[in-house]
Image (cartoon, rainbow, N blue to C red; front, side, top):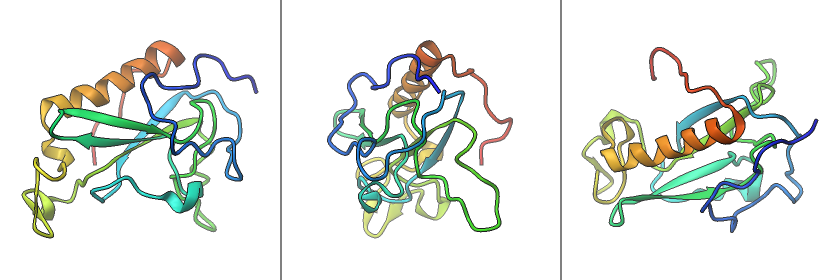
Length: 157
């Protein structure tokens, strides 16, 4: 399968790129995306790439920016979605996988182990506009560069 469009996300760090190593994914043509949280406050190690998404967004709250870390080419199957034995094959839908560092757990809406939301980490359901704009930039880039539709599920979980 041919990979079309740019494979590197503009400005994304390639310092944790796993696509050329032992966990290289299958070629694909991205046509949709999956966004979820890491449920953590720092960039995960992803077992050296064995469990990595396509890209991870780490909030730099002081700078009001998301620092993007690209782990696989855009048109390469990533590994963040679990394929449980006897379950659905989750990595076969040509999905661009995004992990956002932070939480969506409402029990951590204001504090998390002594850390303060909006200062030390992001609670994504109440994320500030600058963070949502950074995610929107990535989604728009995927649309413009790879024709990923600008549609989503009716309800966000």
